[in-house]
Amino acid sequence: MSGNGDRGGLLSAGGILSIIVGVIETVAGGLLTAVSAFALPLWEPQIPFLPRFGSICPLPLDSTPALIAGIVILVLGILAIIGGVAALKRSSFGLALVGALCAFLPLNILGLLALIFVSLGSGEFGTEDI
Image (cartoon, rainbow, N blue to C red):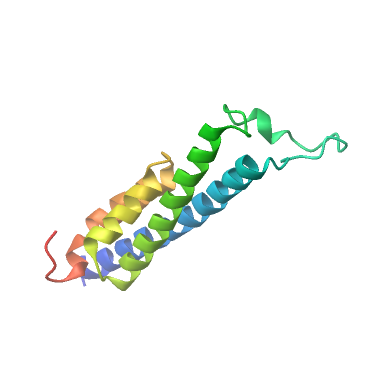
């Protein structure tokens, strides 16, 4: 039991990390898109201790660039989830790698780990060309 068990674990970990990051990206992108498209407030000004999330975002939340950024993050999240499922099913290395890359594109450590783990587990996909 040397390399095969480890690679299967790494590939599964990469797929799960892709799915986790994809869900986070999907929620964040959907929230940013909804806030931008419908001009929804992210806080209630009457509650003094609630943080003002608008100060975190460098763009005005009711602007077109914020809407485009939200849609891009939403699409990246969906692709990361699809790639994570492909990695867990070991159906398509290309799709799993694209999903891990989409999980990494917002530049987070979990996406980087997913990309590394899926790349190391490429031998688990059978005879498909890489």
